Length: 104
Image 1 (cartoon, helix red, strand yellow):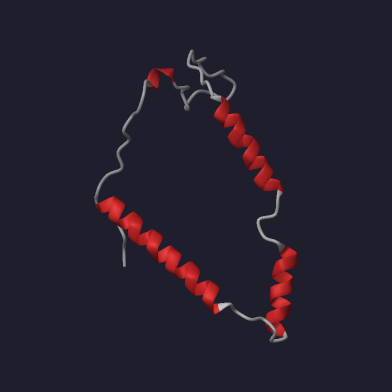
Image 2 (tube, rainbow, N blue to C red; image 1 turned 120 degrees about the vertical axis):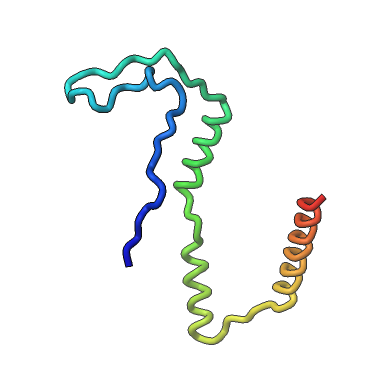
């Protein structure tokens, strides 16, 4: 089976292409300097700090996972069906509510 692209690839330029460096320029040439600048709000530094904090902290509690694995393997792990049912009901209520808000 042969798969072909029935529509040609088209490039749609965005922005001012004159400001971009020419990619076909020789390796030693320097790209054009742009007068554009980017300004980041203080929120960006807060987000970077949070990202660093979460990256350094473990997402999974390895000790707790090992404890649960041990309990499952020796047959002592029990499921609190009432708590599972309660959380399931809350989740379903939230989903129904968000669906109603979307359709309004």
